[in-house]
Image (cartoon, rainbow, N blue to C red):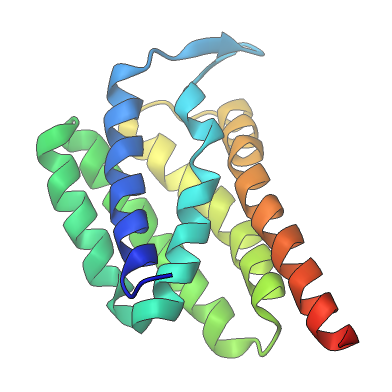
Length: 163
């Protein structure tokens, strides 16, 4: 990949998802309102992981850039909630990457398993859609992207070990 690819993908994904959160209507699911855009949010966490590998902790600047663009392209409350939730999940991600010496696939899995529910609670609380059913649904909706990347990377790592 060209230098900056993942950082650009991360910024673009954050902006797109924040915009989609505003324009795509919520749907009722299991007695709560569910934002369908959350089905693709899990990829943002993976893009962040790759962007962090690309630019280190400067990924926080990329997140702030994405938040600034989102502020003008989506609702300001969504942009602020997104930046706040991502800052918190970035701190979790940083801790996983810094204190574990696991493979990339395991770090992506662990950081997603921890950061996704925390990010979800913060975001939904700040935009006024918090309830535990929504947290469970949104967290579950975010995980397939992370699980897909985890599986692909794990298979690559296993193939490299076998060689």
